[in-house]
Image 1 (tube, rainbow, N blue to C red):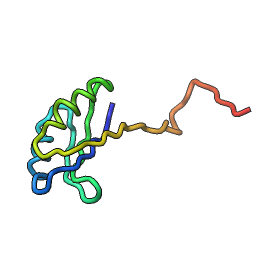
Image 2 (cartoon, one colour; image 1 turned 180 degrees about the vertical axis):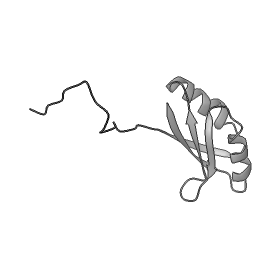
Image 3 (tube, one colour; image 1 turned 45 degrees about the vertical axis):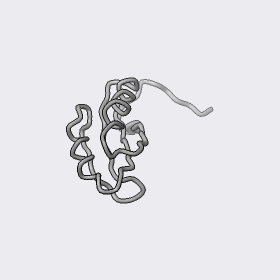
Image 4 (tube, rainbow, N blue to C red; image 1 turned 120 degrees about the horizontal axis):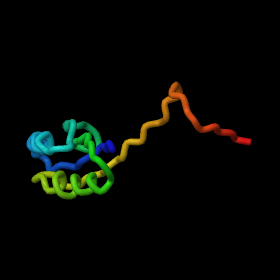
Length: 90
């Protein structure tokens, strides 16, 4: 399961927050951003419970992280992949 965790960070702390995020197991990428959020982490977890533990136990306690917004990734089906299911709208 993949998710994007967007963060508001205390002013002046974003570089250290990103550095700490990159040390957390399960975070595959972390970057400073411009816009409404200050940082984003791309997280890979085995299930929703593991994701919740990662966000609440590893990301939110990082000094400087003020709040988080977790967005689960949902990939659309590949139109070129064969399917075994027949669909009909009629």
